[in-house]
Amino acid sequence: MSQGVEERVRVLVEQVIKAKGLELDDVEYVKEGAHWYLRLYIDKDGGVDIDDCSRVSHVVSELLDKSDIIRQSYILEVSSPGLE
Image (cartoon, rainbow, N blue to C red; front, side, top):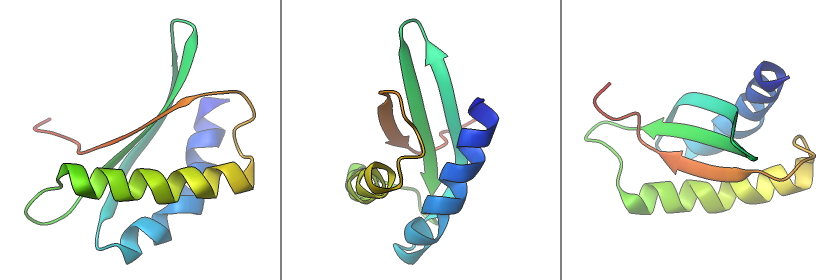
């Protein structure tokens, strides 16, 4: 189930993220305990900052709400891929 959601989310948001000068590095949709998490990892030359994450979070949240790809409640997290 999560792999299909991840791919549909990627297709939906990738161009919007790219238009902001960022790259969508990865998408994760996982259940941890009682909660589902949708994690988007974004990157750009020089790294991302909290403002980049915040802008992407707002835009992506609106897109996801309109598209209704994910029916159950989830927590959206946007961050950089880190040092891994």
